Length: 124
Image 1 (cartoon, rainbow, N blue to C red):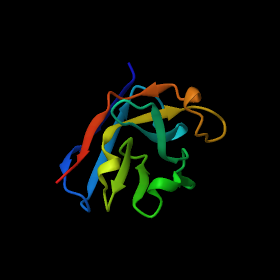
Image 2 (cartoon, rainbow, N blue to C red):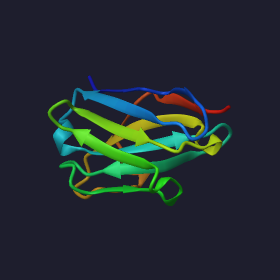
Image 3 (cartoon, rainbow, N blue to C red):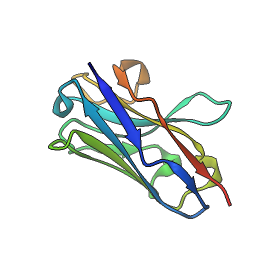
Image 4 (cartoon, rainbow, N blue to C red):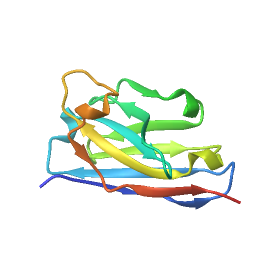
C-alpha cells in the first residue's frame, strides 16, 4: 500500500522558517519524481517545487524562488521542503506528490500518489 506522509507544518510568524518532510512507502521512491503542491483556503492546487527522481534537477515556482528549497534523500525515501522568509500568503495545506513519468513534470494530472497534507499557517 502506498503512503506519503507529510510532517513539519505548523504556525510560524512572518519571516520565519519551517522544514516540511514527506516520508514515502509502498512504491519505488528512487524512480519517482516528487513535487510539493499547496492549496490555500478557497483556492485551487498550486505547484510549489519539484525534484527529479535522482535529485539532480529541481525547480520552484517564481513566487517561492530564493525562499524555498526542495531536496530528497533516496536512502530514507523522504523529500523535504525547506521554507524561509515565510509570508502570510504562503498559508496553505502543503501536499507532496509522486510521479512515475519518464520525464519530470509539473503537470499535476501526471502525479500518481498524494499525501494527506500538512497545514502551514503564517501569521503574527
